[in-house]
Amino acid sequence: MAGVRLVIAHCQVDYAGRLTAHLPFAQRLIMVKADGSVSIHADDRAYKPLNWMSPPCTMAELPADEVASAAEEMGRELSGLWEVKGRDGDTLQIALGEVLHDSSHELGIDPGLQKDGVEAHLQALLAEHPQTFGTGWSLVRREHPTAIGPVDLLCRDAEGRYVAVEVKRRGEIDGVEQLTRYLELMRRDPLLGEVRGVFAAQQIKPQAKVLATDRGIDCLTVDYDALRGMDNAEDRLF
Amino acid sequence: MAGVRLVIAHCQVDYAGRLTAHLPFAQRLIMVKADGSVSIHADDRAYKPLNWMSPPCTMAELPADEVASAAEEMGRELSGLWEVKGRDGDTLQIALGEVLHDSSHELGIDPGLQKDGVEAHLQALLAEHPQTFGTGWSLVRREHPTAIGPVDLLCRDAEGRYVAVEVKRRGEIDGVEQLTRYLELMRRDPLLGEVRGVFAAQQIKPQAKVLATDRGIDCLTVDYDALRGMDNAEDRLF
DNA sequence: ACGTCTAGGTGGTCG
DNA sequence: CGACCACGTAGACGT
Image (cartoon, rainbow over all chains, first blue to last red; front, side):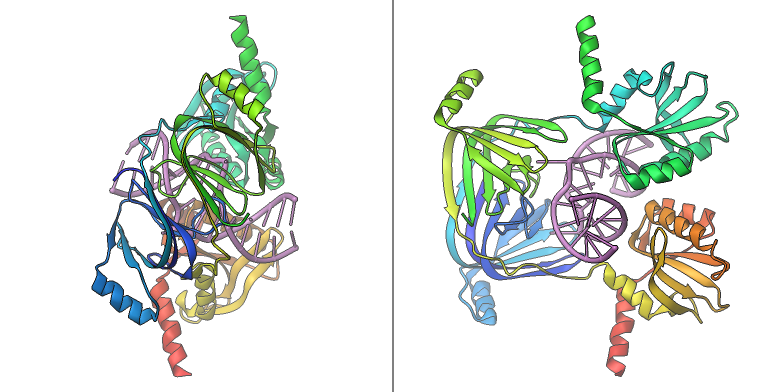
């Protein structure tokens, strides 16, 4: 069945997988999607369910006799017992008490989400506008390959020195470590000579800035909207 | 209002925040929770909504005249226009076409999730059983403070040398970098003298192992169940 | 399939 | 409130 099934019911839920988790009896929303996924929601914690099973998984509604024996074991009336099995052998067992709502709805295929403003775009914008880093700067290449992975941007500054640029949406300590490893490697390459490092991000966390500075890496906080504006302005010229 | 509101409707959604995202008109599930959160679901991608707004946020149903003008702009009949504003100034706008279902349900407070089998336990177990690292090893202290943060475990090996231990559930490159920073700092402390490093995790990724070994850090893959077993065995003795 | 990196990450804790 | 860390992280993308 395609669509969504929405159940409001008293239920008790037990999950066993990497960890084990237990939800005592309470009234909750159970959502079953067309992809087979099952999620159990309270009326808080935003979109995150209390417990769930991700696809691929299979759900079985256990037969009346098993429901009866489980009910006896729990000392409580049950209207159903669902068992959801995941691929890795993890299980979600839902014991249903009173069911207050149960409806199914066809949704059809979704045209999907259109995103804009991610890291790739930021890298593209900086690649198009290396002068953002300084006057006289030029781009050598994007995704410059090294033995341990590609450097986001390889540039040359006004004096012709190579500069490795690491671009992040948010600049954190990991990014500085990553760039440090690239620089260490690139500086062994006699063809590149002395290589500078620039850490560019929309926002750079204080700790990351301290570490970068300590390692002689320059930091650049990028104004995404301004960069995009430059792009638009240029578009208008051509 | 406490509880959950479930709406099945044709809708178009626009989000503007860190990124901008757009959902063309299609039939979807809109869930509004008591915490104010709003999420828009298709019938796939498991529990993750296509788009959402996390609390704290406020939702406003715009008045009829605004709905009418938006409808004219879109060239489509609208039955409602919702605007959700987040704390950081991000907005989620939902334009509603045909509404196929709209129900609200009280859930009451949830007793909450009970978990077992997590991370902190691993550090505690290793702290109780330093001999896991080698014969004659002893624990000096947990969460040994340094200027850049606490080292998970400070131990002494059979020769009395200090050892800094970083504990992770999954050993990845970040953890090695972190331990490296601690070691660099601790080795400047004359009171500690030569400090060894051990990277302990349930699983250590190959890349992390290579980096650690290259830096003279020992790796230990920890068997969580075996450790817990030791614990249980000891429990039985007392 | 596996490894690596990103995420509007989300959610906790603790200073 | 911000920084740090873990997550049943989940997903995307490249090999």
